[in-house]
Amino acid sequence: MWLGLVAFLAIVELFIVFVGAGLENDPRATLFSWPAIAVIGVVGLAGVWLSHRTGFPAAWDPAVPLRWRIGYPSLIGIALGIFLAVADSLVHWTTTFAETSGLPSFNAPFPGSLLFYPGGAIIVEVVYRLLPIPLLMWLTGFALRGRGREMIFWILAVLTSVIEPASQDLPSLRAGTELAVALNFAPDYLLNFVQAVFFRRSGFLSAIIVRVAFYLVWHVAYGNFICRC
Image (cartoon, rainbow, N blue to C red; front, side, top):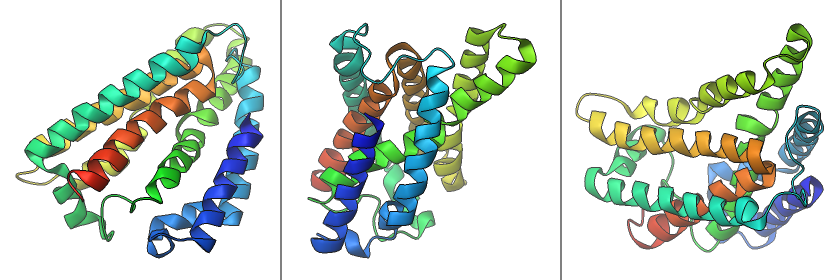
């Protein structure tokens, strides 16, 4: 399953190189360079290996019902995307972000965004969860001799869920943007925490599906066709 997801990243890079559709000029496209894909592939594979040794289900564990692997993750991701889109239409956080980010636009252009964001969901999963949570659980397991594994997971889920909103939302915080940043920080934190829970409950594929569903609403549907930001 992991190698299949890495192959999808390669497809995204080939699309950028041979089709482009605006992505070739987006600085974020460097995430899909061949060296980056190679690093993500190796690091993610290490995360998968560690996750199997710390009690996480396999990506396609037959004991996990499809509603937990695909159904619930998709619904929650869509709900979070709708919430953030409605909030942004009221407080215009994307405008605040654009003023401080230096990027040409908040969202990658359509139709390349249909590939870009699912690929991005795979990449960020490695950085935020697939490697750090199992790795730290594995290391602390030695120190604690296998005791308190579930408690360690919940502590790591709470702490690692802060990484994305703190690094992406808080830099936009300044006088007059407090509400906009708060309304973006809260669902971003919840998104990451829910992904950690699904990772533990249903395997890393379900965690990625949460973010893919979220991205398709937030970045593609809302970003490309409603706010056009």
